Length: 298
Image (cartoon, rainbow, N blue to C red):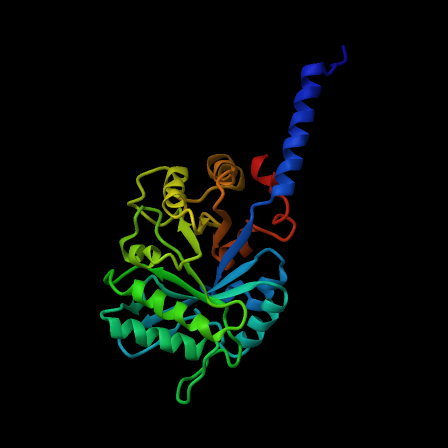
């Protein structure tokens, strides 16, 4: 006897089709990715040419605060990065420099250290320029600075944000984008002062790598979204279980556990992916996926 699809099956299929179409139209929002953590991830230009990302965060300026500055790109040659930055920007991709990271040698022990760092970032990576200050990326200018502060004292990052924001007076249009990438536990003491300034336009909440994150991923993210309604808040995830097997979420789990709720909030910004290398080996986000969220729900 042949199986006949009843009206309820047809109705369910129709509803599923409409849901899928709605998700595809919505998309996951902006997608930011960290680049510079593994020399096997490919060039910055290649990352931008995938079409998968709207923002690339170059990681990291890993030493500052004591008169010395170190740019650590995990073996990537710095030559050519400047041209790649310009190429990415020509494709509409925002390029930020991330400061801090894990395992670096940095802190801001004083107001003067914060002022010195802001001046260095302005002259070495942003629109400034001063004799005696090397520009690792040549005349290329990053679009802003990301605060990825995982160690050291909690003071003076609010002052750094204010010092950097003050340089906006030199721009006729646009300006310096300031973002922060805190741990999922709310609040993050090291970034609380900087976030309190109201100058951080985007917050990438890391739903990984934090043993103190005692709430579920969704609850942790919602605390951040509620605390900073004036900022665009991103869902930060690892792109492969190799990065953090305990925190890794498949696309399906990410959608059902977090995104379907996060997307309903007005300050949901999109996804932050850690990192380009893991995304490349696991194909977590691809150019065909960025405009189609349906794969998160099947």
